[in-house]
Length: 249
Image (cartoon, rainbow, N blue to C red; front, side):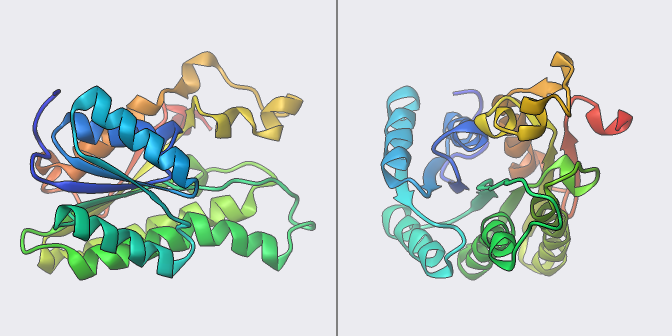
């Protein structure tokens, strides 16, 4: 165990079968949380939960969940409550990024991204408001530097992440009287498949200094801080975790 900041707490992490989500789930488990892995790929979610149980000795549950489907989100939270009896933290990490020019995007393209990157976070936020206990809870939204500075051909992703920042602020305002805090992380370039599959990087249209590439565990550390009592006086904030990349864009 690193610390025990989440002893007896239950955290749901979306998109947690790999990448940033897996690192976040592992960090929470290391700090004493019981963790629910919610991922579109149910088998991968179960495998990630088994790895957490094996590596940390922590209780973990893998659940298949399309975060853009409100019914599936509600079912995931019902499974969480059935297994663990409480719901304290949600880390809205599930994300989808696709690339087209503004002239090429269709309504279906927009909705596909918005359902995952924005509505998924909204649905889980609603569930935490419905089911958090008397001690309140914490929401950590994994947004992106694209919410502030962006690049060509990713309009729905950037728009969704900007809207996620607004959602974060609203949740912080509405959650104040219930001791529910909401904050966002704006990752920069993080060493995950989503980064390296970016066609702008593949084509050479965009280049990265190696010092600008962070690790999933860097985001996990920030998420654990924001969800913990160490951040008890922080809500409605957006924390850039980008190696200083935003400062020079």
